[in-house]
Amino acid sequence: MISQAIIIKDNKLLMVKQYVQRGDIVWNFPGGGIERNETPEQACIREVKEETGFNVQITKLLYENEKKYSFLAEIIGGSLKLDKNLVGNEDLVEVKWISLLDTEKFDNYTKPILDIYKSDVN
Image (cartoon, one colour):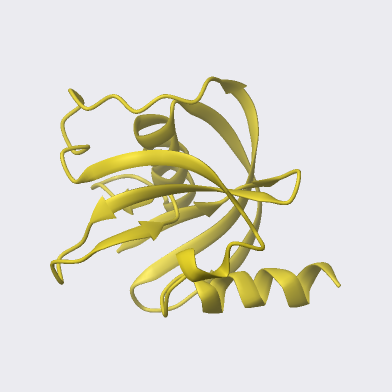
């Protein structure tokens, strides 16, 4: 199971550029696997910290299916940084704020979640 965060600030979305199992390099939401004895919420908070340097709090469960939890979260501390020496970050290329208008960065995995977010806030 995967737990990921959708973090939006000033019409920008915090994303990580990473190698994925299918072999592509894609922009994705920060997140990762849920470890043993960890809730999806705890995994989301830990993964965002590891991948982006930010401390977050979850504000809402936006979407879930049998493979993935997608949470809305907000930054409560930390600073943007990619620690390539951290175990688990080997697949990460870049961490960046992406404009919500920069639609070519969103794929078949991220766009549907953003569509849920957009319909939820309207």
